[in-house]
Image (cartoon, rainbow, N blue to C red; front, side, top):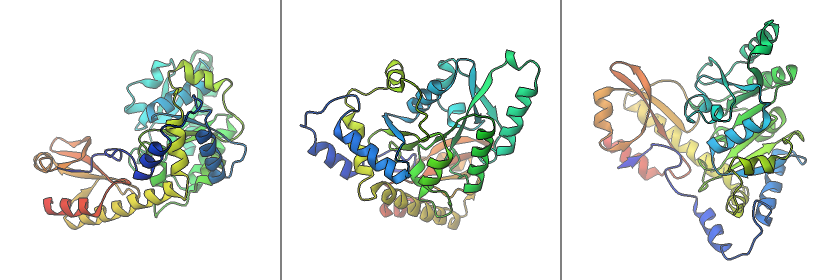
Length: 341
């Protein structure tokens, strides 16, 4: 069975496993205070060109979104997100579980529009009854989005400016950030993100790590007692070394971008293969996630030999499915897929 189901179907990049094995018997202090977490933090700050940033390591995306958002919001505030945003759809109500409402706006291909955010917040404060309502306290975006699309630098700048106008922090979910940065169609750099966002995270789970996300607070704005808040939410890993070693490895010799570019190269070849076979695309994605429309019977037949993800119904007789490449996708995977198609 060939699998293009997700970008974390494989374990971890061999260099990470090697480093974990090499350091296994070292006696290290816990809770992220070890030397490897410190080394990883310094490398990430350098890559972001933010020497005064603060980096924290968490285990997974949903955990990271919940901890960051709930720590930054007051108890009367909610978070603005696209209706298709991960926190809106695929996180089991994790944000609502903390007592905070997700305030959804319609987006375009998974992206929020700066003008829509501005109008939403302005309308809220112009409402004479707004004291009885959930305050917009944070803006959440994904880059790449859940549809594999990307914000341009101008779009990201516009959203950042609206957030500054209303004194609302901007939080960027970077679960697949490497694949966005490596895209051939992006004009956004890691340094741009660090400048324009108040907090974001660099995804490791989907980009070569066993697990882990690196949260970067960019403007001396880490929530007060954030370590304690991580602990309260069950997110402070005792063996923090597990995360530090992985990110130190990913940010050594440009490994993070190297493996991300590989995934994009594989995605471009996958796209050409699917187009050459006459498959219809739901939208144009410049990253590692590709969405195609299949007739339902055709989808069932293909699923006998290929693993892919159900995404959503297109109509009564057609379904949108996702094919994803990753750091671990090989040329052989594509050759086998071509035989099946």
